[in-house]
Amino acid sequence: MEECSIIENLTVAEALAVTLREWGIESVFGVSGANIEDFHDAIHRHGGRQLRSVAARSEIGAAFMADAQARSGAPLGVCCSTSGGGMMNLAVGVAESFQEGIPVLAIVGQVSQGLNGVGGFQDSSGIGHTVDAEKLWTAISKATKVINSAERFWDDLREVVSAALSPRRGPGVLLVPKDLFQAIVPPRPLNWPRRLADVYEPVLPTSSQVRALEDALVAASHPVLIVGPGVRAGAARDLVVEFARRVDLPVATSLSDVACFPNDDPLFLGVVGAAGHPSVHRYINETADLVVVLGSHLEVMQRAAIGPGLERANLVFINDELGLSRNTFRSAEFIEVDINGFFEAVLKGPLMLQLFRGRPAGYRHLAYIPRLAEPVPADEVLPAEECLLQSEAIARIQEDLADYGRLVFDAGNCAASALHYLTPHENLETSIALGMGGMGYAIPAAVGASMNDGEFRRTMVICGDGAFLMQGMEVHTAVEQELPILFVVFNNAKHGMCVTRQQVYFDGRIECASYAEPSIAQISRGFGASDALWVGRAGTLVELDAAFDALSCWDWAGPAVLELTLRREEVPPFAPFLPADAPQGHSRAALVNS
Image (cartoon, rainbow, N blue to C red; front, side, top):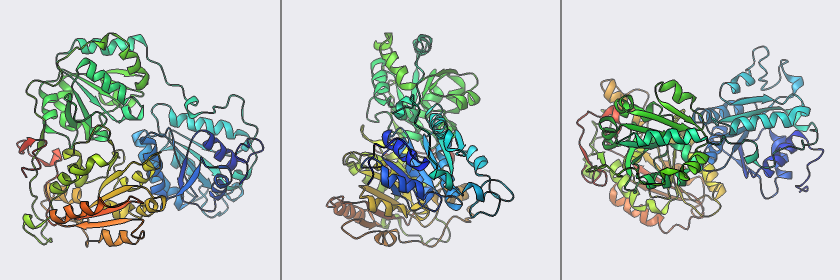
């Protein structure tokens, strides 16, 4: 292997690999191909022990891995693909990062410049009848640059990465023709940032911004702080927790990151959103006179259930970028600032004193009591006592949740129920992709996030069979990387959320939402030998207990897949599907009362 300290006479491919390595990037997720292979070769020669390629099973999975790695604390996720279909696949995942404001660098190989517009295989120059890659990527990125000249490489790279890291964060894209990968770049500029932290300087808070929050809180009688995913992304979680505790301020989280405030803290009121808790919705709608929204834009999935409260109460938004919030809430007050720096300044000020009385008097944390759904006509109907119910499975998962450090939710009914009923412990990191909201994200996301972990840390994925059929091949990537991930797959042989919608809104006419039942366990068994992959299956509560007992003996030499077969459906705790008088119970007892 060549010496990794070489920084002169580098090709574009080598300069990319060396720079990413020096910036502390550890993983580049992708699938190789003719027009990206020079970059992969440069990683092989210059990555040393610091930077390596991770071969995903699809470019969609690669982009989701990079996205999740950034959500889990890496300053920048990196993914790559070749041209043509590989590029189009990568775009699916990068669109999620764009929608959610996740810093990702996507490096996309292109055909050699001389093949543009003359029938080059996988040409995407936009000439003639070809796809216009630059326009495509510009629509789903903060910045897109075509490397047309090695002379401008350093400027183009810095511009794209700076855009990815600056508010509102998001993807930056480099389109690199095959021949340009081998072009020699000029010497690196003397002012080149040697650390990613130097690429973008956060905006420090002003004294007037700090006073704006102080004034709003002092004037309020019943304030609520809604904490969103921007808090964890900005590494400000500990500061925000300390702030809330010092001023005794009640807190709610959002579906995007249900555990960004400790759920067992007395100040915690619950989760807001479509699958949130009715008790906190009621408190905000009927009592709160100030809602401080931190690190969230309160998109419709988060705000629909608290609409009356948001119209009545005073609103203050604090985030590093507030364009969407300004467009949605015209009469709110906006504090656009780096969250971490802001709360460092706030904690040095007069808000060190206790202002409020903490949890509202008599407040009870309530959840919806699970109830059986109407059977789908084509399904075999078994007595509920003979089946494993979704709520029973989630209650059993809760018993072992303390053994996991990360929980990644996918889309669908099982995720809605898990978000609603699970109580995360204080050190649990949670994540869900609500930007584009596509099925299958959680499976590769768990791989990407787990690659961040410097020490042993278990991750759990909660997903449905539909998600597994879309991205389940990435379990094979987890086996190859020997990652301690438990993939819990709820298998009802249908897209549950779609079926529920068709039952509620289309008189039970089920179309394009169900299929023959796959055997997730059998499929998964083919991904690895028994000493590298644990596979279990349960269709009753007794079988589930036995499966968890067996899993407790697993040495976590690799991942585990647990298939849960569901023969009876429950109505998900999803507010749009529930009547106003839907039965509620204390959150810890709701599952027992099903």
